Length: 201
Length: 266
Image (spheres, each protein chain N blue to C red):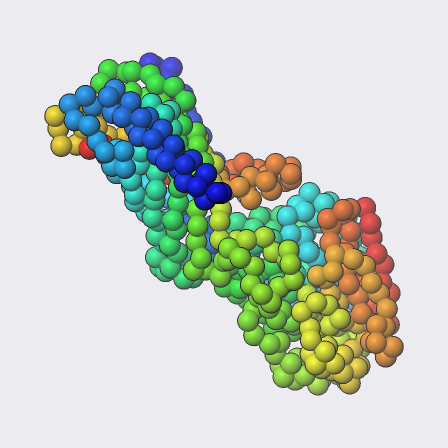
């Protein structure tokens, strides 16, 4: 019974996201409809606690209110000075408003990312040797960021239909907590920058 | 349009000028800045340069700062005001999740301390890549130094997180010269009666202290104050509280072959 309900909910969500995706496409690209699971853009980011370089695909959801991305990030040993770091991240960016300036659209952005990493002595489930609650799981971290995104359309007939450049200022949840709770920790100590590009097709 | 351009440019410039780290790639990085490396060796050099005329001296013990930065800083300020304190011992757990950022924040706060300081690694400091970060930022996990005819032995006794057993052979060797010193102090993060020691290791540690006439074994980890000859022998065990609820630390006043412990709560 419970499974049935969950399945029903899943189907409903699927249907909903399908409608949303189609709506978005209708506005963005009237010429050709995309299947709901086809990503709207490919992404590459430098830094921002998601790896030296992170790459992935993104979706513009809810009529471009939310950009959701699935990313894989990597830090080589030469930079991590420890093990290789592999990060799987889900990044959510909200363009706060859009302003057209000539051929460009400029948006202030804000958002958050959830990242998973398990190869550097981090864990999701506390190993058995520890008493219950000895440590909080260390394999998941969240980043928070604000920034600015510049979009340029190339036209729907082009192979690459548009491009975004963005620049962000971000931090990690535990860093932010330390800065909030301790007057000795300045924002300059916890914020760092990231740059990236989205390619629409 | 101009307003927007200027705002964005201004924001970017401010950022570039002010971020301690312009780019960060992962919370798990272990890339310690060159200026922050070999901190133990640098402080041992500073301790060597201390001129002291009498056999009496004082040192402070601070421990388990974790992310209690404000209280920890209050402790450091108080130690700075006390001219009698020659140096500071940190009893481990400078980090919460063993992250480079936490090490850097600790390092930054310790720059306000106007006295040399020496650290022992704590269990939290081993988390994630913390063990490697500690090695680079501070140095060896086990080390010892001499000051004014006293010996200080820093002993890594972390079991679960370090995935190794404490090096009791090394400790035994360092302790064997105890008759050359007025006092031998051992500093280890977890007390032998703490959670990570099995009965065998506890027995081993206790008998080593007793056999080598260690008058004081100094610890953190429990976040609470304890000062007693725990096993009923001649060895006193001290656990220093964390600065979590109130800024607190201990001062050890050495007078020739004896000493006194004072708990400071601010």
